[in-house]
Image (cartoon, rainbow, N blue to C red):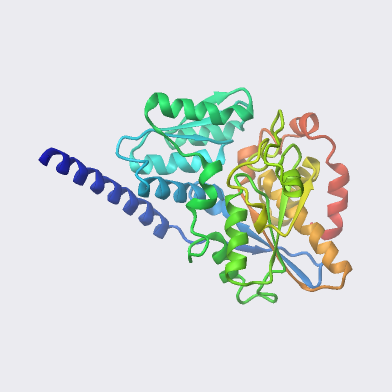
Length: 357
């Protein structure tokens, strides 16, 4: 009996120390920047990018990974020596590998074989292992299989993303956006634009807007070859596709449990060529590269701004810069790859020039 008590106390001490390390890491990280785009075309509409690429692991998924680890620790799922497994196209896995290394845990990412090479290198940089599958829809079953085989914990971001983050608290991304907007010309955004991957961030933002009774509306933008938009329209949770999309980190070939359509005011599908063209155009505005999911977000924001201007409305729109384009030098920023996989982006680039850049 005494041995069991000592063992329990030792385990509790490890969990408390693990939580302390994660919280200390959070305190060392300043909030991400809110960038106002200089677009004279929109004289009465201001567009902002919440730059999530400045997190220690370089993407929006750093927030999610931190929340998922805390959720797993506090639920008793992650203990000293637990092997952590995640199904991910890359960015979540990079961030989870970072936190696993912080806690001294083995981490395995189950990723599609088409994942950008730079992302795989970053998973490995943080001590993680990449376990490849041929099809993007095979990541779930393989993650569960590995977790059972290794007696590990399958993090399952697609199920737990929307519940691991406290959407009412003062440390989530929505609260950060509204706090940073406080002294702007139009401090309460007319719209926030978000592209769902797990659906966790759109759930957090949408719930926070309602909880604080803001008049802000939430537009969710979906890439091609994703079921989210169709699910939003039909409510059919059995929807599936036989292949994944080409905009990494967003869109899904099945309806994920963390995607909550009830918090979304409007949804649109953005063509892949528009997403990729927009990040090439954005480089001329910011002087640096962003991932294609940022292009999906920003293209949606620009179309909204056009609509608002046509109606004579004034206001602000906030969207997210999800990660750096340096991860995609061999894909979205490689001319031959874009031509072969995305198609002609020249018409969208010509359209975007009217906004500036």
